[in-house]
Image 1: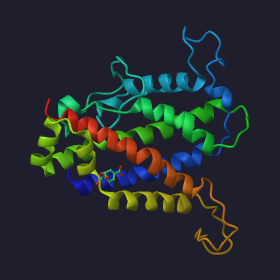
Image 2: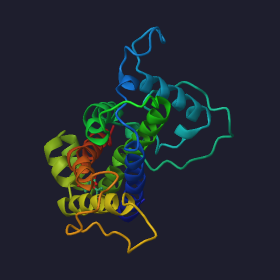
Image 3: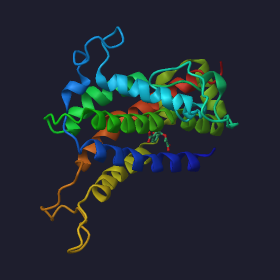
Length: 254
Ligand SMILES: C=C(O[C@@H]1C=C(C(=O)O)C=C[C@H]1O)C(=O)O
């Protein structure tokens, strides 16, 4: 684990996030899928169709051993044993007392309450299962990316143990936030995801050149607004990643 490999992981994960958003944008809002009143009876609590779908899907993934890897943290914790495959002996790069720090609750509410209304057209075509299946892919990608802040924090801690140790002992979250922040790197990330939304989200035809998405071609329309992807990273993805980093560090000496 090094700063380079950590940055490579985050860069590759951007592709998954952007493709996920493009797929979700294929479907309209389909609000009944998110309305707890839509499923009458259910499981004795007011879960939405989306929540039920994610819960049931994660149970299958848990059974298949997906969460044996610390890179993945489910939204709904399970005691489901994984029985579909033999165990794999993953190496643990994280400090064990901090390994399960995550902000999945914040990712969940941000995704459904803030992002979806900006991403999907406000209509209903009844394709609820396909729609929430694409939500699941987005949630998993965002969760993997954001909760990877644990690995980022581990690398930064190892690289500057003396300074981090002092701040952790003092529980100085503001100073920790400052020390782990690289504004130049954040700027690179935000501009790159915006560009990825342009490259991945253009319409590809056999006639004419590949559309470049530069501002003087007013014809160009993208499947997901590139500036929305910039905003997503600026307002939510990067701040939540840094929140994970700080919370991980606060437990790094436990
Ligand atoms: C990931 C890093 O750490 C921090 C978090 C970033 C992010 O979430 O993309 C970017 C820069 C840093 O503020 C890094 O330095 O590469």
